[in-house]
Image (cartoon, rainbow, N blue to C red):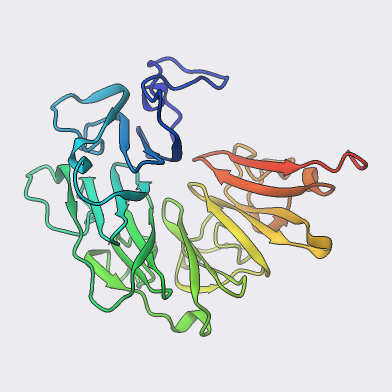
Length: 326
């Protein structure tokens, strides 16, 4: 998310072009997750590599170094179950194992690890399994915000823990500022639809249902919930999940305080919509004004977008160009 090259396995110098990451030769990398100053890379064989800052123990390495400039394997997972998913918060990390187990490590200052951290400075340098509630289904995906964590199960349950200062855990922040242990999210706001995808921004969340409906909750002061104008302090966070006015969504991705989603249009094409914080033009609207409701990116209006992603202050999209209209 920060784009610092020590996080990317190169050096400490900035780069404006893509560079090959050294140290991963022979591995097929299937997923990369970025925190504020660290990077996690997962291989097709279930091996986990990390690099970047280790000030909070977020690399999961058995060492005292405060930074690693090239990817190193996280040895804790060399035996036993295979890793199938990975996520990074600002200063903490998560993994999902093929048996449905979830592990976390790094900073636990805001309860984002889901268990009590014995270290006086709220740091956990080695992965530890998170004890989840019973009868919730099998965990199929994980996500991390700046200081919170969440998982989604195969039957559509969401379990969350960590900071709730902006209502990102779907609880009233005036009553609950943090959740120390994993708790199951109330399903009633989702109109009986099953959740199939869950994403986190820094302090907001998006959930996609099997009907293509999209729900949002949490921090709202940049329009990141897609609900329109935000004009007063009471609207800075909205902890109750409510539907975003964008139907037939197929994929969604969260940046820090903005989002991008793919919506299926007539003719079978998919178009990209963005909304939220736009100070650096990451919503692709042609301005730097915040985008308060999901708005189609006109640049791609003649193309079908098939892959999207967000960084802290940027968006990515891969398109199938329609040469007749380009």
